[in-house]
Amino acid sequence: MRAVSVGNSQPICRGCLASDIREAHARHRQRALIDACGVDPLFMRFNRWEMLRGCEEYLLAAEAVRTCAEGDSLAMLTGKVGRGKSQSMATAVLQSCYDGRQARLVPANSLVDELKARYKDKHGDSAHDWLQKWLRPHLLAIDDVHRLKHEKPNTMMRFEWLLDRRCTSYRPTILAGNLASDEISRVLGAPIADRINGGGGEIEFLDWPSFRGRDQDDDLEWGLSESGVS
Ligand SMILES: Nc1ncnc2c1ncn2[C@@H]1O[C@H](COP(=O)(O)OP(=O)(O)OP(=O)(O)O)[C@@H](O)[C@H]1O
Ligand SMILES: [Mg+2]
Image (cartoon, rainbow, N blue to C red; front, top):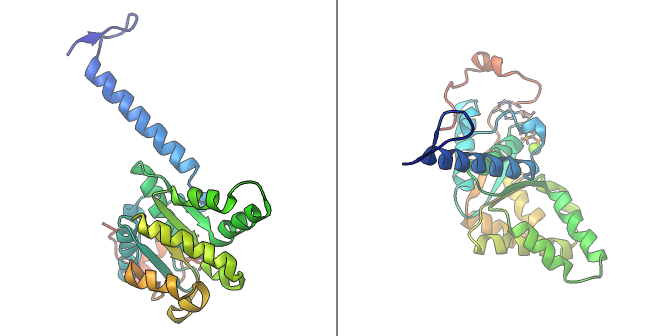
């Protein structure tokens, strides 16, 4: 391999230079993906799967979320408040960005508000543009879907359309909300519930205390496992 000399400094091997440039490009891409991913800075602390800590049941649920994020279907996280649903989706999105894949986390109400704002814009096929925009990310995580409870059938039809198109494009989509299993179909509609059941399924975040207001150092008191999500 020939070396190039820059000024009076040590010659640099072309191979090393090329690999430095590739690494710089990869870091630049990761940064750009993370800046655009929509994750709240509150959730950035646990930006890789290995960083998540918790009891065995929690780690199994987080592992199931990881499997969905690395798969190609639709899954739904249900359960009580503060159990780590949003954090596990945020970790999935951040990890995907580190792996160089576009991923987005969006609250369900922002997603449909954006759609409704486009209905009002009479220029062009705006619902189609909305669909294209949210089809683009490799991984899409939609939080707080219980807030869709009062949406009109027309809006829910477009929401279902997006989830369908993502499933048929083999792109993973993860929903989360404070819903019990028997509420999924009532709130999101039977076709979406069927897609969930036939895809990544429902992942329950239930059987451990809320993470809110507690510190990582409380782990021993909880009898929590030391291992992370592998
Ligand atoms: N594994 C974890 N270790 C430590 N803290 C965590 C963990 N998972 C989540 N948290 C923190 O606990 C808080 C609650 O988590 P999160 O918001 O993910 O819960 P949630 O199930 O989405 O709650 P809600 O139903 O109210 O939306 C957040 O501040 C989050 O950063
Ligand atoms: Mg949440």
